[in-house]
Length: 493
Length: 95
Image 1 (cartoon, one colour):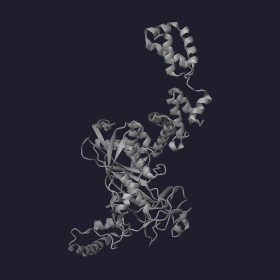
Image 2: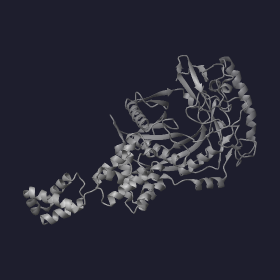
Image 3: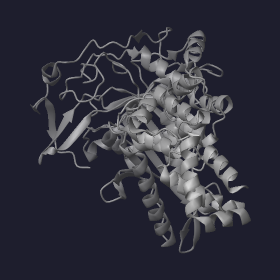
């Protein structure tokens, strides 16, 4: 993955490099719209959340929502980007029935946030940096429904005027996995700072993907923009299809037309959306209804101080403070709730006199999160309270249960049977450290298997066979330390 | 800056204004007259002067994030030539 060669795709005439840049549209988690007092929300009846400003009635004037401005600044700070104390709004002109103004209010020339960069982690733990060109505020459009009537389009303006943050990346990604990892990272940052809920199913976070191909190291090729892809899987599928399509065209002697394309998630292909060459002639100009947006440097400073611990900082801290591996820390910080859960489990363990934070991390990542994600859930849906993970680790540390039995205890915890120590009691899972009972079992085993006993005297490693037999006889509950001790004494090794 | 017939045709199309072909020539000449008049502004030396997009020297006023409007589809649809089930109904848009 990290080697450039692995990311190239093979054509008939040799290798090609994919170049990817993304425009992420993130809906601001505000109550009201960017320039009006109408509600933002999902699932309201048609045109229920529309003010006369959103419907572009004559004489209506936009007034900007301070919260949305603040969230854009927070997002900018989260992306390590420059905050522009002076920005302004432009009109992007085009006609479409769900855009009643005939233009979208956006920021073209002077965006609120300038250049930044984010460090992104690949699945294998290696990292790469993606440059952010800008972040600007803009209005969302309404929604057109084409399937209600064969001869008409229905328009719902509830979404019209909702605040979006458009985050434009540099063309710094080279394969579909990197693009998906970048979107994941942006989503995590936005969720940490609370600027966007990141709900991709509801379309609150979606991406336009710019795809081009070139010979490794050559000049950039002509790009196509794939609009509104709204899941990690679709982003990857769209890129893979589109890159192949472009390579085939070029290898057949054709050339790529710069155009906007749509991803069909049913057929797993992209197709041309509008080939109107004039569609990109938006005739931007400063919106005369809006004055320049001037930010107070002190306000920006205050916002900076109010930011929570961001994912990268949290990851470093988890590694340093608890000795977690980069991988475990990376899994833990994807949602701040995961890290909170982990840290409260460690705190409970410490309070109970335990100390093995890494073991806590193991149970959280390998058992709990894996089972949750298999059901499509996150940590907030965990049936097991953090304190019980601590309880289980304490049982391990105290030698009450072995790692194998602990797994069984975890199964019972997952099934909602309560605290681990109770489960151990109820199901009789306590490790057998009673030397009297173990000695009896071992003595009988040695007597019944004299050949094996002689073999151990010759070759001490063969003791494993007896350990296995004792475990079998005790249903895995024997304390392995005690078993070894007694065996060695009785076999005279 | 000279505006030719092709530019007038394109701008009219982008603005969704129907202009008959035989009007384009005279429109081009009218628009060139307007542009020439505006061109006079370039006689002023504006070196080092920030472009002005508003005549009002004050910051953008802001509103709090509070829901104060909406909830009345009838009001929004009052002037719609056609509506159904609280949707605007427009001629079929083909993508």
